[in-house]
Amino acid sequence: MYAGVLFTVAEVLGGAIILATFDATKYAPILKDMRIDYRRPATTDVVASAGLDLELSKDLARTADLGERARFELVAQIHDTEGTLVAETVGTYQLHPLS
Image (cartoon, rainbow, N blue to C red; front, top):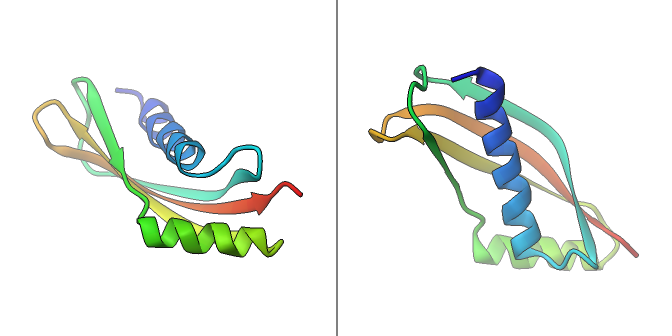
């Protein structure tokens, strides 16, 4: 699988998690930096997973509500259909208040 596709899978996942976690009418997620480590070639379909801790998300929202930019890292793992880790990303995001 093309390396750019693996990167895109993780980047889209990060955006989806942020938009599902935070109110898009109040906050804008900004990807500041993303690093990817390719572990193995992906020769099948892939599945990406990531999670954002509930307490961390509350802290980030509180920080953004104060008018500050809340920075955080989100780790995503990409596995092939056999469960082999093919790539891992670390994205640095910023939750930016819209008002």
